[in-house]
Length: 405
Image (cartoon, rainbow, N blue to C red; front, side, top):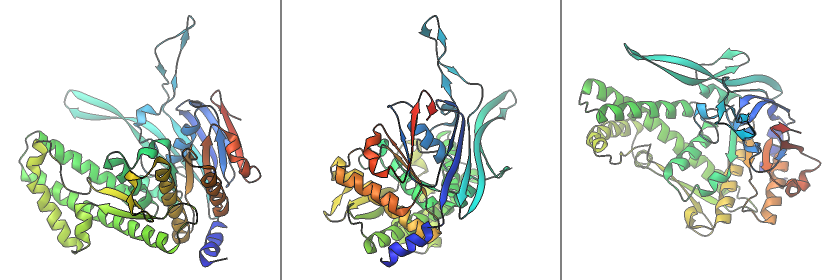
């Protein structure tokens, strides 16, 4: 047994994952509870039965907006009312959704819950706007920042929507990369959220015609500081994964090379961070007029995450659909192994219809790797027979009529 396999075996002996999951008014579920083992979990059912909703609920136990990046209001349970044998307009439950869980990590158990509560904000003397916000509790205590969740649980996921990750715009690829960073840097989620908030405020001020440096300069200074920290964390994660992949190439899935295509990230290759901050701040000031003409703004919000099929020297977007899926699997496997070695606990894997576009050899190889890694992987499929080789080492559930059997 080589050193990597031995070290993974030692770290994976310290199990981590979700042992109980409870959903309330979440998507199609009025109430659902699943007691789970720290092993692969295969969830089967017809298309539209609610399999992905279970994975999405688990993703809300980590920082961010979940695997669908959905609005909070869109997650609440929707129920069609039957009137005179015909469906009436959709009715939405008055109760906000909630997800609660028992998490096991390193032999300890923690209770983590997240839900939505309604709040109100006075926008002017005559206008009070209501809005929903997500709250998170750990062992019954409300936490102020979602980044705290990263200390207890992390997750990596693949969904059918990600099959087009390399052929669309850069924003989904940035989000994919940032989720990889969260596992190693729990503050990264907070930084990216704060940057987005400041950027929206800065953008709106300029769109409204403001030229007041009293407001704009502090925003630009804070954006530059956060932006450089975000870029530095991304660079560190890319370097970590590239080094890991180069030294421990996969025996079945293609070896990848990862790259960042962004102005700020490239400047950090040549200049000290403090100088890059000054450049970024001045660059934002110079680009104020770009906002008025709806032109692009250089910065970390425009960075692209590039992936290459190393053996073919080919960018992922030019590869076949099956090759692109295999490249994604390679990244997820490398992230899982790297995190297990460096952090001491493995992420929960959320694999939604993951075997689509994989041939029989790669499907069985992925199943074998999941079993060897001894991670908790939640896997959905319409066909349970595809996972017959997991029969003696996984839990199998079927979703039917908004219930799990």
